[in-house]
Image (cartoon, rainbow, N blue to C red; front, side):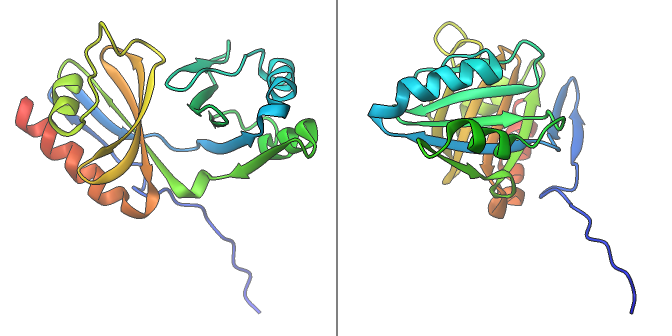
Length: 189
């Protein structure tokens, strides 16, 4: 019998393309984990995340980056958060499940998301064409996040800095999401 090894592939196969001084690239190797809890257990969750990441729970629409820059904790709602991490040093889902015991719901969602970074001088202009959220840099500050729709696709926008945004959308529609970003970027450069 032949030995076969499974090989992980990303939704966009590591796509990366320059558009003049702008870059549109798939961010690969990200682990995405959802955490939800009840109001009664929110303080416990906060204490545990301080121990693990040295970060407090962010309010909805905000995010916190770990000091090493490898993990980002995002506030999606009053009782739900998303952790995006490139740190492969430990099994994050197991660590969270063990630390949070049965007081929170931890769900691995890595394969459900595609992560794309748009950066450069025209990044904001390109996003303003397809994103209904006001991304004005005076209002949508560094580490702010927003859940929204772009070209009829559910997405999350994360401001890394005024010229760089990390975008997340469903991996099942990754090619459509990428196409919308490419077209928008081409139209503003």
